[in-house]
Length: 390
Image (cartoon, rainbow, N blue to C red):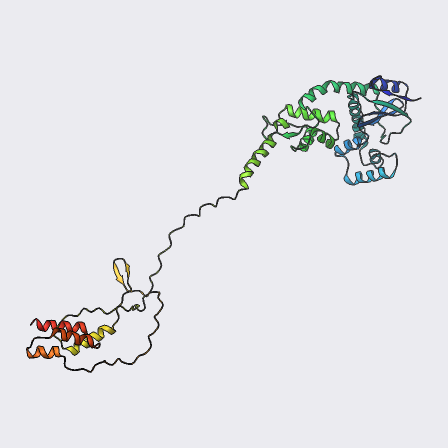
């Protein structure tokens, strides 16, 4: 006998009741666009199922319970791939990797979640395959009436959950400052640890492995208690966005802070003056007439001509101090023989005339003085002027 049709003509609870009453064994497959689910019966009782045959929903629930070691799970997956018709959960049971009582409790809850998911299908087709084995038959058995009643109760509560969590794609984040001290059960703490501000409700359901209704109901309850927020009130996301705005300024080269004020440098120690630097100046012709003879005057003039004058001075504290100057020394002049007078010495007519009392020919004396370069013109002219004034 073939049992197949459309969910528009037969409701899913009616189909379950028919299979239970006739004690059928096999798999009831339901299909719609993009989805394929199955429920297994054994002599009219529900023994397993999956709302999406493409996912290992039962195995994920067992893994989410934290009862399976990594090595045991790896071995079970290898056996399931190697042996056709052997499910992962059944392989874990055969290996003794999961405690039997916990496995039956998890399996019974999984059957209810599967029926709850399939009851929400608005449309689809069904087909029953007689004697199809359940690859994850671990010995659980749930009565159809009990499962359908529990599934319908969850449907009544689902409207409230859907109001709090409007979509499976809603993103949740943890409230950073709850209004009161939070009190959490072990299962609630496990869910809270999966909330990171980026995962959706559907992603958390898949990781928890406890069924959509159970996980979504717990998440909605945490939202109502003020411990979680939906994306519309994502507190963590808001803080992140604010920090990103500040990061725009942090990308600019920072302004260098002002250097700390330092104590004024100690005054440099005075430089010891070894020898004053002598800078040659033009000869200052400032001679005081003291009645000495011409030879003495000439010797004094020569001394005055040869003696340089110290001119480098520095003013410090009102006192004048000769300091060594940072100058380049002058190149020494080449050695020249003493200069000979162009005219031989002879009695100066101006002096002779004065001695004899005759009028002094000033023009002639001046011409003679100008003609003889060896004569100290300034000294001689002053001497003549002084004699005339006697």
